[in-house]
Length: 424
Ligand code: SF4
Image 1: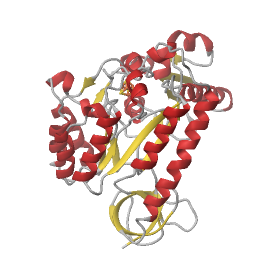
Image 2: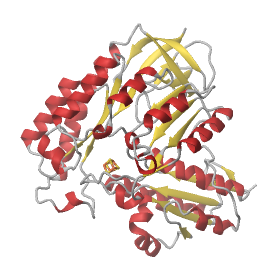
Image 3: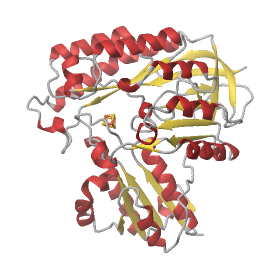
Image 4: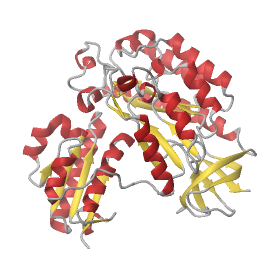
């Protein structure tokens, strides 16, 4: 049987598009392989969000192109966010690429295979969890972000469609659903005129057979008390709050067009922590944004030390064309941005270590993701506060369990970002 491979770069929103491309290719009679050398069709679904992502996309295209001579590849297809931003450049610069497909242009993709197929998803995640893209695009226009020009304005999926799709995923073995969007808290405002995340969560919580619902990307300007209350109330919704704050200095937040202040961020965090004692907050921060002085960076560091976010990722500012921040006259050098990012991650390492060490001896539920390839461990899984790829792993030493099941474990040790436990 003919085979195809797909390389999905960037975020979980992009992965959902990759899953549709995979479904269509499969409908055209190809079987998915992870071995690029075996694949007659290789699809690279690129990311173009920041400079590192663009570089990774280009090197991946070049690596995939080598299989046209050293492997069986007859068709190299490139699509995704990088294509959206640099369509002509990509078309003209890589002679190895056979087809450049615009972002989400599934119709043109089908024409390559001369088929008419539905646009369902072939899950590229392990069969027990799946992403649910509740909306795509973004209306926020943060000054540093190219997403609105890549993926357009916010476009939500109707509630009924999402519920049906989760019901169908559950019948195929999915136990954990991960809600994703550019701004999940704004889900529904475009089609219903109001924020509909609470209602969606209630409907998903009622689906039998579904165990965990995890929410990503809650913009701090759009989190409401109602949302916090619903998350607190619904048993299947993980008490995991992914709230990208990006900075804490008020001048920078204003320049970023984030529509929040230090004070409002502090208020939200306090509300979450007082209403949900076991809430885990994950945030992301940008260092070296134009105008970030040593003083405002110190303010950020102090805030991180004080807030002790259980999970945190820091990124050096990436100066992106066609964004308002590109033209700001107060750019910070890349070296300084990188150094500050490293400094933040150093601080976070200690916070994370302390947080996880405090869990030793406690019992938590863990979803088993896979057999461990590390010596001395049976399985690898995740707790309610671990998103796949971006957070930690729970290494399991012993006990009975199977992949995709949720087991109770006792935590016996902790590393900087990961836990070790045994199934009770
Ligand atoms: S919320 Fe801001 S950073 Fe996030 S996708 Fe929208 S514009 Fe970009």
